[in-house]
Amino acid sequence: MNRRIVLSLGLASLGMLAAGCDPSKPRFRNTDVTGADYAKDFALTDHTGKPVTLASYKGKVVTVFFGFTHCPDVCPTALAEMRAVMENLGPDAARVQVLFVTVDPERDTQDLLSKYVPAFHPSFVGLTSDTATIARTAKDFKVYFQKVPGKTPGSYTVDHSAGTFVFDPQGRLRLFVRPAGAAEEPSQAIERVTADLRLLLSGA
Image (cartoon, rainbow, N blue to C red; front, side, top):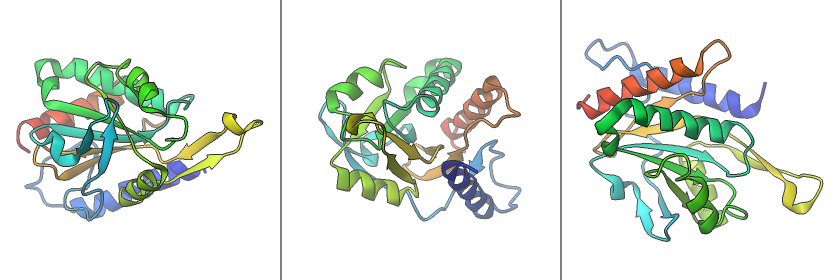
């Protein structure tokens, strides 16, 4: 089994343990990781060159996905799905911030991120930093990534964990969004994310 999928499933299992069986908790359709002791913050640079932390987006529901612009499938699919979620949210989309953290700072320059990420939605923000900071941030989020050599030095790819972290408007990690499964239609994945973001926006 692909290692990044294994890690995604592991995070989902952790979330189920954190959620427990408390009937008073919101009925999220994605994995509830409320109270998890990881992914507490980051200190990165956005695609305009501005230093940002999680607190920079306080008051909004924040989604964080780790990927890279040369990714052929998983990353563009994740961003396209979030664009559809934003469309579903209508006016409430203004209260959601989608963040894309590169795991390939060597190729994903600020300029490239500024073109690639907002192409999916003008409000989406790409984040980067130096290699050490990216590695530390990924570790804090329990995200795996590893460069896979290509035929030439610049043609490498990057294996990485797939999944989205969701923070509530108070900056607390609440959800882990798993990638759409083989038995799930893309519209179903989009709907479950939309429903959960609505819950968080309503104060859940």
